[in-house]
Amino acid sequence: MSFLAFLLLGLIAGAIAKLIIPGRQGGGWLITLLLGVVGALLGGWLGGAIFGVGYDGFFSIQSWLIAIIGAVIVLLIYGLVVGRRTARA
Image 1: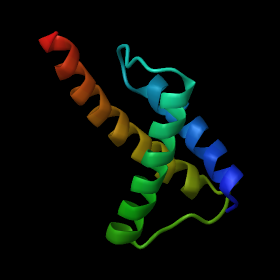
Image 2: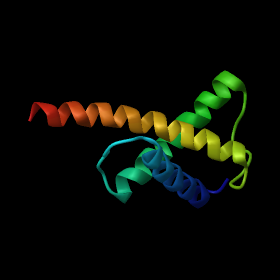
Image 3: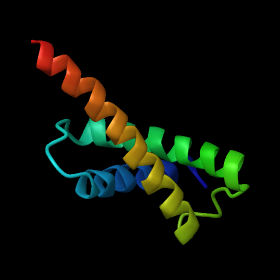
């Protein structure tokens, strides 16, 4: 998968993850892109390590599911970290 396709996959996966997670997560498109790309990387790594699956291509449903699940995990962690930081202030 090309670098630009991977960025697009991460952006869309991050946006879908924001729609899946209830509540307000904050952050704009840049944060969504970063969280989505990190989530796609995490999902790909976990998918390969645990299940032996990887990215087959941009239009593969497997690639999208891996990226979205990874983005949801990263978004949950981000929400916990940012939520604690704003609760103290």
